[in-house]
Image 1 (spheres, rainbow, N blue to C red):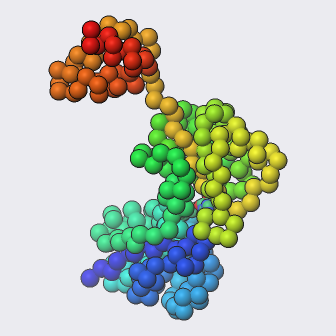
Image 2: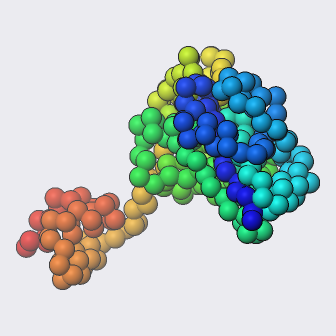
Image 3: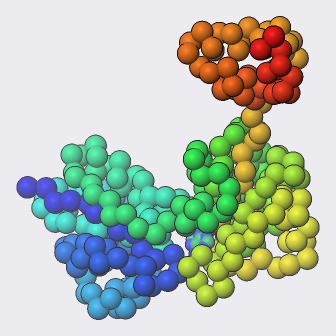
Length: 275
Ligand code: SAM
């Protein structure tokens, strides 16, 4: 009978964030697939766990992935870890999960630390709808295409960035989204020098022209404002309100919605609607 692949998240800075269930998953595995075996060995030593480790990372993932799946199919249980955070999120794992799924190997994910979600939750920006963008490409053309594709994105956007690329990335974000767009720069989360800076993109560019970035960053960027319908006449707006009220929406709510859609002033719309 086949074993299981278990994705085990590890702390993003604070070792106390390892959960009892993560510890148990590591203890119960027959072997651990690790992004960097030296990093994982340190964690295992801290937890007092001894396990055989195999390396699984970007540059050996094809060959190593096949071997791992063969071992699981032969009945062994594998726990997968990355250097920090949730495997498969801007980390090795995505391909291994796909390979397992294609081979009929059960995959279980233990929930736990993830820099993206930790940063989003503390950002102060809307969390109802968001997109994860990971790292922007270092290739100029791909980076420009990625940012271009986000021009009209209304959801809050999450980016990962390394300190030495932060200043350039902030400039690119400012060029793409404008200086007034809000950003939360979340650095060193769960660590001693944890910091969340909330400002506009223009202010962030100016700040990091003067201040050397330190540590790992998650950038949470506000989405684009809702697009207003251009040049909608009062008559058309009143027709929209009438259509909504016929569907049972109250006049007040209909006016509010149409005012938002058209950019026409709410009070004037309301006065016209009750006449
Ligand atoms: N799989 C990981 C996760 O679940 O968050 C992400 C791995 S990705 C290779 C590493 C990036 O995550 C860093 O460059 C940084 O953008 C972000 N990151 C990781 N730990 C962080 C922390 N403690 N504070 C802020 N950002 C962090």
